[in-house]
Length: 269
Image: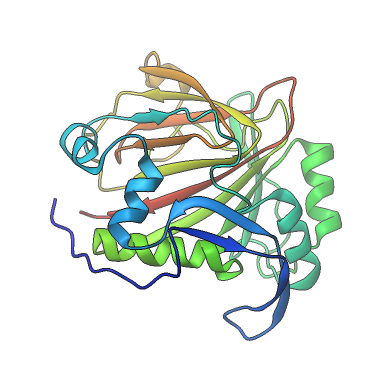
């Protein structure tokens, strides 16, 4: 793998932010959640090293990158700090123009069928309606590019883009207890899952196409075989898997909601 990297300035090894009024990229003010993270923003290389710690960068690229999944169980619920949360999304929905489809999807996967519960594309999504769907319909929220509204996430994506030498995308997924949002599928990107709140059970399956260059349609359970990996991600944990890895995830029956952020890179590589 070839990566273009360069260091960026930082005031310290970790990002610490107090609750404050902050200007978003659009110039509007927003009350930002307090953020203290153990990620190291002193350079792109150090940031990635802290993201996959205790695995080393050398070990990762020799043994996992584009080869096999990596699960890191940290037993440290404070590791990511308040990078994003369900509560912060509720604040955004009340203060910002968040629209269905382009900004946010509401979906669920029940009895082998995926269903979108969105209103018309372009309709403003309100906190009351979105959270009612989560509670009453057992729906999952898929929030696109959250770094637009959270400066620490903006830094995270920017540093990773410098590290990988290509674009890095982000989506936040918020799922209530005993629920699944998406059908089994595979992506066309390298995927890093950061578990921010709660817990989620994951199943990974062998690829139908190694290092797939296209996103798959929803897959039937009987077409993907038995899982190669089954595990639970808890707050502070990380999961990596190569593009083409079939996956699905659901929250625990007895527990709280789950929030995770999916970072994606290396599309069409």
